[in-house]
Image (cartoon, rainbow, N blue to C red):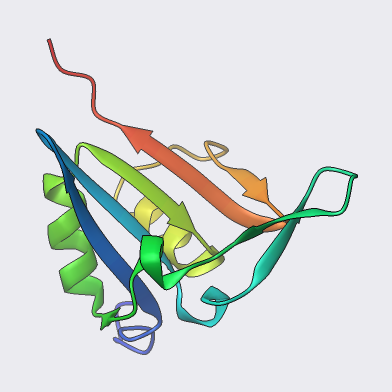
Length: 109
């Protein structure tokens, strides 16, 4: 990713909830999809309301991750970036509807 080829492959939205700085980011092509969950035919929508609509660069996403208290990441590229930058340990992800997914919480005292 160092060559910048994926710079606009990310969608991100920052939510301010009380003292929390919540970053929701996904791979751009996931926006608008319905991801299957469970066996009852239920789905989870990947919405602009939560993930945003604006494409961001790698640098913008990293800036937000550095300040976040809660992070929700969805998609292979955003997960790879978070792993490369040390935000997620290897094997520290799950899947949502077959798509790589991770949540990060900053614990403060």
